Length: 451
Image (cartoon, rainbow, N blue to C red; front, side, top):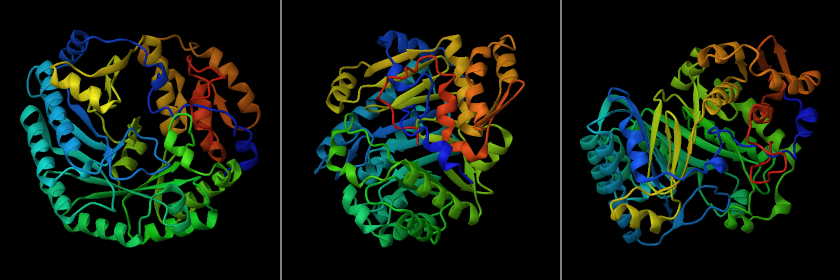
């Protein structure tokens, strides 16, 4: 049971989603090509890598979208971009110095399945040539059920894809019209059935609450329809209305958006339905069947969080490929330019397309450890973190003192060096994590609302 009165007090607080720490606004370092090559070359040869490939194209704009994407009618821009993507794959592999092992691949966007099936097969072959993809690698792809073909789904299967994530958002026609995404239940069911028929083991549905004209009842109806298709996982995100950052969101009628209490009631209703149906809650916004790998990682304390959300990926290094893609190296974050044209020009000229980066200090790594455990497990043992990093047990004394106000309200319990969120206040995990964020300024308005 959530505590809406207490949680609602944080409705005007703006805090990061903490898919990284430091967060993306603090990627301010300039990184030359030779610096990036040196960072890649320094990764131990036997270390298994994770790859993220970004395909920034869609056929139409969903007005709620917060991703880096472009709308294209034809295939020529896509083909030219994929040529550049192949070039970047080769450059990274060369800098790594040999066929490095890969344990995890994620295709994101945009809509990765916008490319022709033969091009997807070719790109997977390029990856297999440049890297040593593990036989049990988790290979995930994001799919728009409205436009994916049967041939593409068969191609995904023969290319080794193990997990597919379908954008659903809402089945309510009024909500769909308000966000410019008309998607029938039948389209989603067809894609799900095809994925299962070709043996793709795990299917995830993305749902969104807090959309214009959305109600508790419409959320309940959506989740009941989705449950009938028996996906293995759900990702349930709160809509982040940031029209000052994403201009197409200005097409959404702000007066039709639910307030914080209604948003919280929508999430609570979705959560209750999923838990009652046998799904385990994973962190803030994921749900999975009891036998799912995400659940096993949660129970073993090995669940992680990155720019794709909660993940079972255990690779220490994630290399981002494509425009706007972010990579996580042992001691740095690297982000490519978000501009597709600039990305192509730089790759075609034989240079990397880095726009910004962040070299990580020891303090960054220590705080990242704390924040990730809070975001994944709603608790953290600061003694364990301090021991791992060679710190004195009272290193986070100032943060513990700041937590006392939240403790007095019942939001957290502080027991020695253990910090534990009360279950009724789990949606405030970002606000608790923010206490350990040395960069966050209270006046910043570039983040989404806390709830």
